[in-house]
Image (tube, rainbow, N blue to C red; front, top):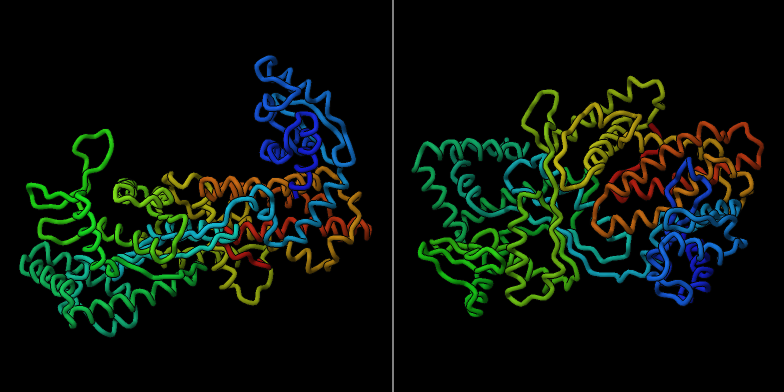
Length: 579
């Protein structure tokens, strides 16, 4: 991988600048594939290294003069074939046979860990990380809005785990509050046990809507709902039994949907767990003199900042706690339980102020670990409708993607005969949803387009799956062979070099994704890899070529598929072998 080449370049530059090689590593980047400059594999950014060594002084020379002076002192060797200057950079071309042999053998050796073993990532400290994501409201239908939180949180957890962090995935359910008061009363009037067992989430959603509508017109129903909630908070056995039944049935249904998404959780938590513990938080705030009572009778905490009188409410005037209070209790409890270095919350951007207040209050309370708490916000999905134009629930979207993909596969002339077309349609449909979601910045709202998402050409999840399946079929058709068993001199075509150069960059892409937890870098990388592989597949045939050439090309395509497979799994996509 790039490590070997970076270290070799750093060793030579370090002798000229009299700097330790390890200080130069991050200033040496694998170059993006370029038709204009196909001879550039690595770039050293001169500004980032000059001025610290004996030979060059930033104050006396302009960047280009510094670049030229450094260039004159560097020499080609067994690793580097050419050295040239660019705007503020020194460019290096790697020995082409060494490039092919090193990259392909490294991908084969590391497998799914390729890129993660790079010095850019292996030197990072391994941490305990808690990721809270998905978090639907129990007894309400799993809305499509939860799709983003679920797949983004899954990606972050996958990335952290692949890097060697100890990751705990938590689903913090909205399993408390007024919705249960309305359901407890409404089920007696509108509920049906048979419908509840047949389709729990759908029926509870229907009951909730009917109960909520009735409560808006009838004050007695509102009072009855408040009374049921009061009984629930007071630990009434009958109310608790009804609540527990609704919660259990909902989680069973969620688990089935998560299985379709390929998502799992280590812990199902929820607001209900922190009813009592939130009172402990309030007592602690009082003892520290941080909780004050307002004229309206509410309990608030003053927040630091420029705005005078800025505060967060933690207690209602009737003495009951709020969502923020329970979140404080949950954060403290998790830290006591997991002793994690990072706690990541994945929710939509509308909750930005909530998390800002949460983290501020934790700091005011003296918890230094609050600096390790992060909110990853995301924008909204617009115009995601089924053909029927229904209210969108997540399972409707998964079913729609499955059905449309099945129809597209049936009408395509290139579709192979499949053992289980439904399973393939499910995986390819999900890939389409994930790619459409992950292509841009997470914070941006985006307009969903079914036709665009399900195209087999272009920058789509279908295209990634198609490329993976085609490369897998090539391996099956042409047999294996080991990565040592090929002649690197047979991989000097521009199309082969493009793939090799692109594979060099994978560790840097992973590093960038880790920095801001955005999947778009990996998405763009995999799409480019698929395009390079597609071009090479057409111009560098394996079948019908001389044995030595065929074997070398096969190893190149195997390396491309291995990295594509690894990256897709990070995104939460299950690669298919045929389609």
